[in-house]
Image (tube, rainbow, N blue to C red; front, side, top):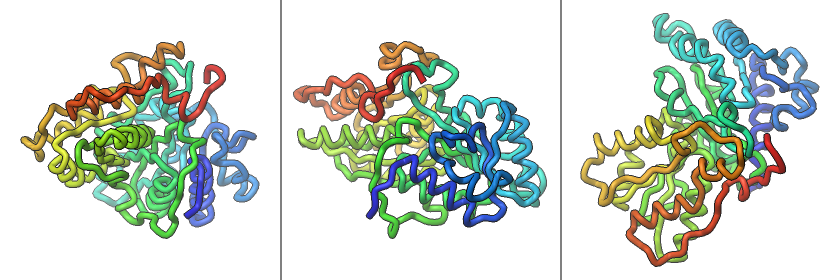
Amino acid sequence: MTTLSYVDSLAKAMHDALAENDNAVIFGQGVDDFKGTFGTTLGLPEKFGAYRVQDTPLCEEGMTGICVGAALNGLKPIHIHIRADFLFLALNQVLNMAAKYKYMFGGHHDVPIFIRAVIGRSWGQGAQHSQSPQAMLSHFPGLKVIMPATSQSILESYRYAINDFSGPVVSLEHRLLYGVNFDVEEDKLRTGENALTSYIVREGADVTIVATSIMVLEAIRAAKYLASYGISCEVIDLHSPTDIDESLIIESVRKTGKLMVADTSWINFGVSAEIARLMCQQGFGLLQKPMAAIGMAPSPCPTAKALEDLYYPNQEVMIAKILELVERNDIAIPNEKSMADVYKKFKGPF
């Protein structure tokens, strides 16, 4: 077992993608500058050449169109957006072209684009630099969406998606995770399609928590806290909103009878709604209590930190919801207002 930070695992995945695929290229704003996209592309232009690691202009749709053309002609483009919000400018190419090309042309053309986009908070990001579009992207057939929560998950899913998968993939990386260290068991890396699907992170018997991205870590923290009071939480990393292991969730709820979904985006019309659909169609009658869900408040993201702390869910909200599910009112709820104070203390806006 080795220890590897989230950002170092991203850097390793980018390095390995270029080393193992002579036709892989990386595009993105600032991929070749002194920051190297938060450190994930540092050193790659020097080792693999400027042709394969290219800075791009502020022209998201145009560059994505170039990536589609490159993929159709045998390259493996990796396109990086330092904010997922910038990806919105390229949705015509992503949703109307890359996701549909193979279907529209009788399966004759693959579009193996791998898109990285950063989600999540710091403080002061505001309404246009903080959105988490997994539900919207997952709505469209032909596009895979992943949300790696750990370094091991990055090594597993990026290798499969870049080396073996022939269609477009969007990976949403949470910026609060970048500096977090994780234990990596390289001899237990999931391979093939298994690298994309959901998995149990922590077994439990009283409550099932289905979580995405950084909310997986929040769920584990909540589970550890509640375990000291005799409450056992099973945590499932959804990992891919487009490749949900439905039977895994159903069987977990069959055991616990209680379900909470913790997502990084808004609740309405989101991942929580999809899990609720799953329970209604395949697990009707299994729930002993109404399903709980936590996510961002139904508002654009405020800029002031005090308001951001109310906008994003935290441990206080998560544990309070779980205690409602298990009908316990004798346990103190941690007074913790901000995830950003736990994972990374930002000194100012951005």
